[in-house]
Amino acid sequence: MLRFQSLDDIRNLVGTVLPYGGWIRIDQERVNRFADLTEDHTWLHVDVERAATGPYAGTIAHGFLTLSLIPLLARQVYALELPGQMVNYGVDGVRFPAAVPTGRRIRSRITPRAVEEHTRGHRILLHHEVEVEDQERPGCVADTIFFVLPAEESAA
Image 1 (spheres, rainbow, N blue to C red):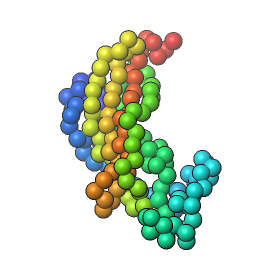
Image 2 (spheres, rainbow, N blue to C red; image 1 turned 30 degrees about the vertical axis):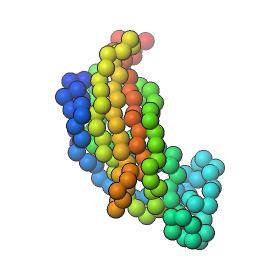
Image 3 (cartoon, rainbow, N blue to C red; image 1 turned 30 degrees about the horizontal axis):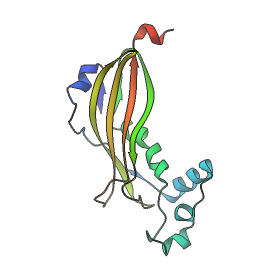
Image 4 (cartoon, rainbow, N blue to C red; image 1 turned 45 degrees about the vertical axis):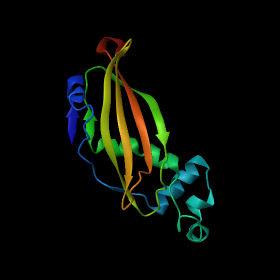
């Protein structure tokens, strides 16, 4: 696992694909729990019998489930141990290019995009492509954005 302890640690890897973390299996139980939490029980996700005859020949993960796993996937690759306060600012460019079939495994291909000065500190952009086992196209593509606030501001 990479440990980013300074902004330069990340700057030095901008444009470089980071080492992969482990695979995470997307099983039906996880999909069902997500459906319950979000109250999205669309048959493509939760009705195993009906989905077997549907367009994906089985159930698929919710796109937002795949997106929500990016922090877990990222924790297998790197740790942000920077001075100051880390703030999750959001996600840009979210797309779901391919379905994630239930039973498959996913992992994230992560590329630091930028470390930029900002009025409140620094902004870090990381590009994620959530790879799906045995598929060419990713299940999710997104850029995560973090702010690093100076230590004195985070104490306020």
